[in-house]
Length: 261
Image (cartoon, rainbow, N blue to C red):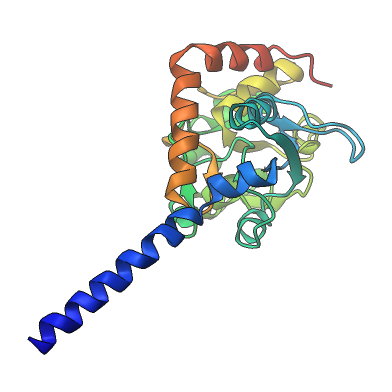
């Protein structure tokens, strides 16, 4: 009997704590705050771009951030971040969600959550058009004398480090100007997301995406979230409705055709 009485007391105590725990969630905090804080890098067309620090952010995920905030009945605040600092900034609660063309990666998911995916993608090369036949396979790329360039801290660098052992890898800090390095002949190629190679070959006619329809691997893009299942559930439902209504496809087409600088 004493053991049963003790168990009942513990159960009652846990039940009394549940309402307080249920009230403490990020969804309610955002609504009460009146502001949705969105982390974004500003260096990844067509998702998020900002030419100068004083310029406004533009892009697919920037526009969708505004729509997400509107669905919550709050204002949107775009918080600058970077790929190397992404997880640190999220852990320090600088923003409520990251919307910047983020690829799903298991090492990130150890510390955070992802929304449902909104885009299928994969890593593939981009190079000067005269070099397309030279860089069809990883074996062709991973040769002494080949100069690969990558942006720091993200899935592009991780892919390069995992697969390239003989070619040289240069880490270039500016993800906006990195493609000009290939145009200028200072690097031979970059391996990045297929959607980015498609866009960059439109912007720079000297460059060609290499088999962008058949990338080296499979990946998906989603929104990165703190560990709050109620908040994730709301984002997932909003994103599901946006995709299923056809609105997402129209926005993607719009930003792929945008007259980027």
